[in-house]
Length: 528
Image (cartoon, rainbow, N blue to C red; front, side):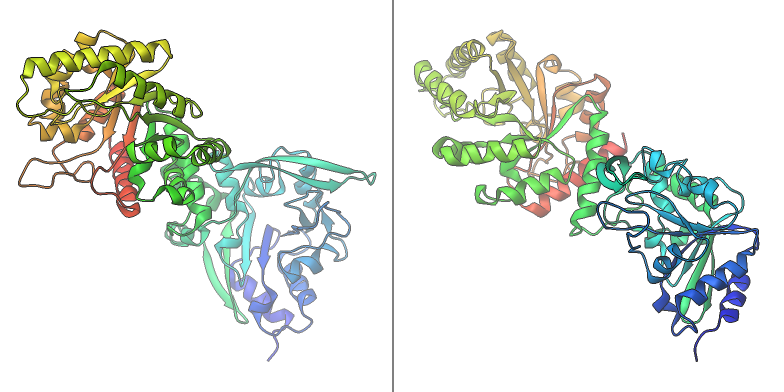
């Protein structure tokens, strides 16, 4: 049996819609089932329910470009399309978020909409509605995903993922104008997930007439609740589906914004993401998803860059397009007891030439591994001589060098690292601090190596890797080993450390493990 106008009016009153109020209605005619008279009957019922002193508003958003106030059809439901041309209706001039209304407050609510810098700001129809004690949002057969007002909450908290866009419209003189809209909301939202919040706060009444489940909410209250939720969690209205590219991208913008407030720069080792050099897009997507814009090219990728000029150029172009940069590039330099200084310097020259297209902040040297049967002092003297020659050449080329502590290297523990760095006496040689490697060398990376050591001022990079001594795992997710990574992150932040915190995996490489390592980093950072 078809739904009558009176049944709709009765349903609205039972839901609690007050006469004389201002209400923004989002609707789906098909959700009601069969309605006598169709969309016009629904509009008449809404007007009767609010009465002559009430004001009825509906979104009248159009996709047509340029937007024409008289003719651009509404794309948010048949009821809204009929309403925008209903007798007495007035429509706001706006290329993305036009609103139509009937009632004594319509002009006051929509006036000057086109002049606002944002679509949903405090002086938009949405913002003005939410400042009124008698302002309501009504859903007829739709859910919170249609609640445009909640985008205003994102604007209020200045969500890091909001965009600036341009859209065209035809002005009163018939001229095409371009409107710049700041803080514009993105594509996908999980507003549906806010239903429990609104219900728990007593800010939503749910009823039904026809087949349509309906919701009535005070506009000011639900806006306040959403703002508070976003202040607690900037991603509160984004879904947590790892395969939703829209929300992954927007979460990345939030992370990037959080990182921009830190003194350190978060980077990631390309080799450790778990994708090969032929899967560049996938590797960069995974890194960018964590808000990271700086990468380290590890030894395997560095070899491919040296061998393939085309790959080098493609990577440089891709990074530039994604506004990413190379922070560290590994240099394939021989470092052993039998290495001649001239041979090492020649290899460094080649690494400098290959990496010049990226202009990295550092070149990282391989570990000077300890060979059996060589006198320790002779080995140490040779390592210092070799490193000094490389440092002089790097300084001449205006390049900085990183050396990373390694349990089988000359620079394996706090004392040997400090000794080598002091002996070289070149400010362009900096330490890459690897907590897992200090553990494997038998030290406590924070309580011993850092707190009692002399290498603080030499550190340019903190490797975010963790591990244990036997019989426990050699490498673990950060925060789950003996590397005291949380303590190191905290003390480095206390010193306004301006170098790199670098996500790496060593022997546990895979996309899943990289994501787990990144998740652990964000957990640790959030608990500092």
